[in-house]
Length: 144
Image (cartoon, rainbow, N blue to C red; front, side, top):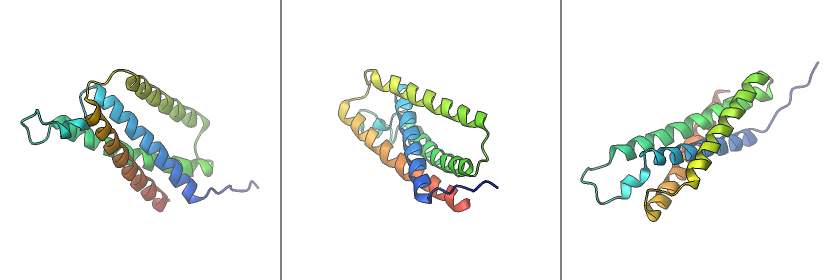
């Protein structure tokens, strides 16, 4: 009978948080390219209370960070138990690589947002993604 391998919960939690943060930052970069920018929160040239693009970007980054942390922790826990087929693993790796490659391509282009606003938006996306990825991973590990 094969012996079951156990990984420490902190290792799974840390890896899931890192994956959730990377996905949240990738969505932030891709969204900024298409006009969904958190930097709209710090602009003074708009007459609206809060630009709709900034609100949508905020919720999109939070959702992707939470779900990225949750699903990564769930998948890692299932992978440790040997419950994920090889094709599913390969598919998930390919999707992650393509998403991060697309974000890298977008990040290498010149930014349409002013520098200070872009730095603040990046830091806000990083913090929001980290908190939400931690929450998602924590809930996934408590469930399992």
